Amino acid sequence: MIITTIGSCCVTSRVKPDAGFEAVLIDKPFFFGKGGVRPEPVKTGLKWTWTTTDHVYVEMRPVQFKIHLDDFMSKDGVPLDFDAVVRLRVTDSVSLISKFGEDWYINNVEAEVINRVRNAVRKHGMNETAIDTAAIEAIDEEVTNGLVSYIKEAELPIELIQFTVGKANPPDSVKHQRIETASQQQRALTEQERKKAEDQRKEAEASRAKADNAYRNAMNMSPEQFIALEYIKALREVCGSGGNCTFLVGEIGVSPVIPTATAK
Image (cartoon, rainbow, N blue to C red; front, side, top):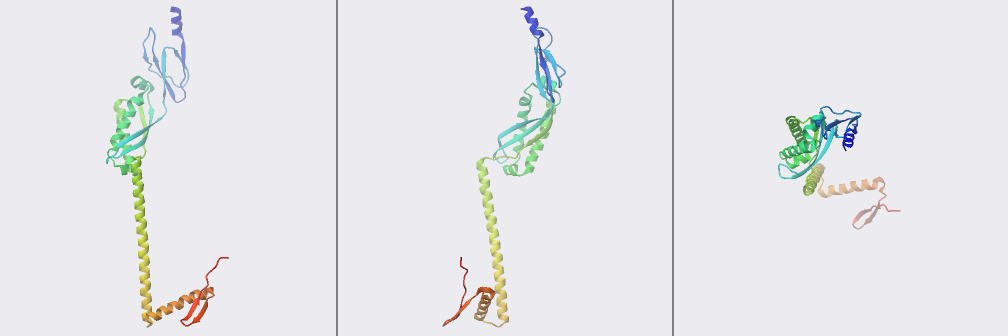
């Protein structure tokens, strides 16, 4: 039994972190020696350790964490959904694991991000948060500054690379109301443009009538004579441009017959 025990203690295990990773070694001896986190990590390469020594791989490159945020109340009491992204970089793998453990992000960062976004959203209304980019930029800046201060105060060996929150996503009922409002506004604009066109046409017709009446008075023509003249002008315009008109002479005077185009 003694020989077997000693032999098992001498068995080694392999630690081989990939590029961009470090391995933090944690000694857990059976009988002798001091346990705990070793002060130096294993860089990229290969290292043999005792089988009683655990290891934790830590990515040293910037890592992106996505967070979906549900039902954050805006200033005007509308529940909004967001998708946020946090990019962090570990600066000291040994200190991170020894002080905060493998679940350092879940236990020390994620809840802080959620709380700070919630508090920032409460300062802005639904419309400005969902439409105006300035409100989103203000939330980004407030949360970013808060996280930098928190990381420093908590002595977390990490660096905040970037924090970004997407535009707010309001409930479906609010979306439908906004679509209906936009449709009503568009209809109102269309009616305004139609009225504007009709008013312009009315003004043009009034100006034309005024000019015609001035011409009639200048020519000392009665209204009937002016109408007859306009009738002659219309016939000349139609029949004189290849209209091939036929004029019928009867008891009621001369009546033009203007042929219409027929389909072949």
